[in-house]
Length: 222
Image (tube, rainbow, N blue to C red; front, top):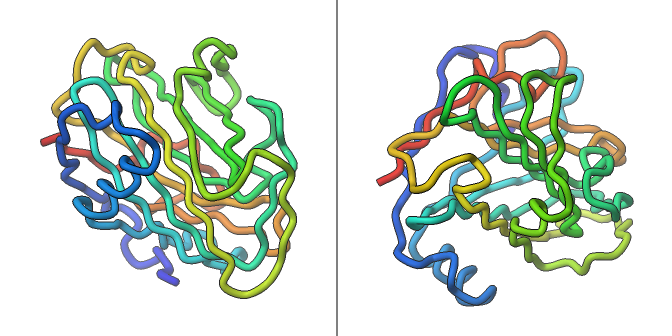
């Protein structure tokens, strides 16, 4: 556990490797390539001391000309998935999240996926002002992982699961890969046995809130 209380303004920065035609690989090949070629980053900032629980969470991120790919590895005590319909309350489950600032201007995109692969995706002008993706757009977000798309509720030390998502740049309003993106990566579980809110880049707010682009880190696409 890393308490991000000493220097909450130290935004993270990360170089994101280019792998040609990455999004065209099959699920297993894509997973193996990410594990072999991309070093993991930790999601370990405990920004709010009233929620000290910190499951072990790592992510790997890479990109091609057409998409950005994120794979999460999680080890936690309660694996929960209740939301089975897209744009449901996935943040209440064992959930991993990728938020990215709009490359073209104001606002940001949030991609939230529970451990069973149910997704919530939206373009937001604020936490309350959002345009959720319809099913046609959500279907363009490729998702696969170690758990089936069915309800999950299991408990015990050292439970592990992983999940990968492939997000086409066109969903961010881009025709090609940008040079940089501003983003943050999260792990949460509002209704898990131990409520938790972890971030990659630290957040200097009094109450849990991931909808804060001012604290996004920088991704440098190589």
